[in-house]
Image 1 (tube, rainbow, N blue to C red):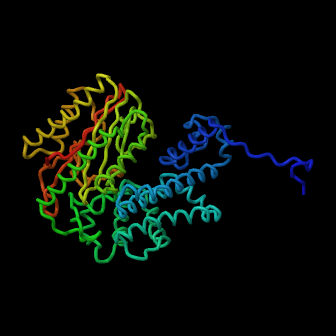
Image 2: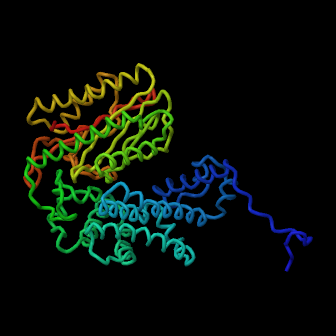
Image 3: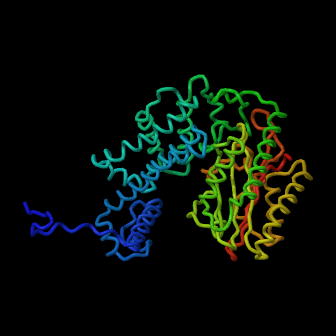
Length: 464
């Protein structure tokens, strides 16, 4: 055996050189292009993926000498993201909601038309299974443990058995109803994991809505403070209590963001993620609030053009930026949904945006108050016209939603009657299936795509 010790006269094997930044960038673009291409066409050839990534075939083959190598890398990055998502979801959602969102992502990896199924087949190699199975199981066990501590799943639920149970979600099939079928099956799984005394009836499962609608919510159905962590979803709460709870939650959100402004948490030189985390910590400091019913958002500059479901890269707020916050803190089990815009510098267009958002909100609220039978379509049209009159475009597909029923993570397939949208021809003043009054959030996302920025304003529509 050659001696590679120092001074032995033999050369040590060359060390692998770290990749240059441009090489890392090429590799990342290839992986992302592959993921996108395989979503729509699992048999996309490698040369087409290389072209989409903006690299030559030589660069493609230097990074990925075979199709299997590329598929395995896509698989690895997806699974690593899934593992990392568990603690982040638990930090932002109630345990059972975090579990549901995580399982929804897990199911997405196995959908046949995504191309991930090919990666899954390639990943059946024993070395890859043994590498990823323990951390995936550990991530799921972390979620199940949190749910167990909150009495939201049966005690002693085993992560390996749950993985085996949900593996059928990868076989939900193709076709227009695949997503709906996956959501329905996932509801059955989640309901089966709940403690026996709190499991919902079949009729309750039909009422709960899409898989991403938080499981402790109906049309703003709160739990009383001091009650058990999980209670029967049909517990009666008076309308007076519900209104008082929703209004109190919003008042706390207003106080929270007044303090955010006083402490200059959203300010030039601060990163979006940093500001989001500091607001989360401030909510805990002021109100003991650690949970939020949808992901926390701080966006600035060009990121303010992105709709909710997008996840633009973190950026540092600049001196002349527009920035906005969209938070859904839970106060004493009542959900608030609150958004505000911040303008730095003296750009007149951006300053006008800061004035137009609350003005259109007030005008939209007046339109709602003036027509007892106003529908979602009519209010959306009114808001759209008000925005256009001031030179703004609506940046998302709706202008608000029912309190406590807004599934921010999964938009497609949601019932139109839960939104202020052109597709909702039902009156906004109505009761839900349990006979309770439905309450609404008015949500304004204005954008000017030519100038490259947008703004956001959100709070209760029908309550003070």
